[in-house]
Length: 116
Image (cartoon, rainbow, N blue to C red; front, side):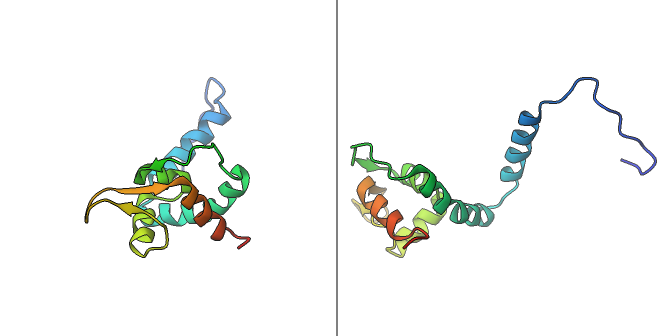
């Protein structure tokens, strides 16, 4: 837009909610993996506090993607922490898929929240 151009008002009012949602989606889409990891790290304690204990009664096994979502961290951050043995996981064969117990993830989250 040139400095001499003027902004014309929209003929119909825009939905503030959809504008904010679109802005949020665009912002997150622009993040690289490092920025997403940092955002996840900063949000995780707040989400854990808001969600409280996630006792569904199901202590089943979770895939890597499910575990990352459950902990509100990126898949890359989950794999890094698993490699450093910070987050408990089971791997049937070397280089094979990782599996996570929900109760162990709950224990890890409780130990690594702001209050710990």
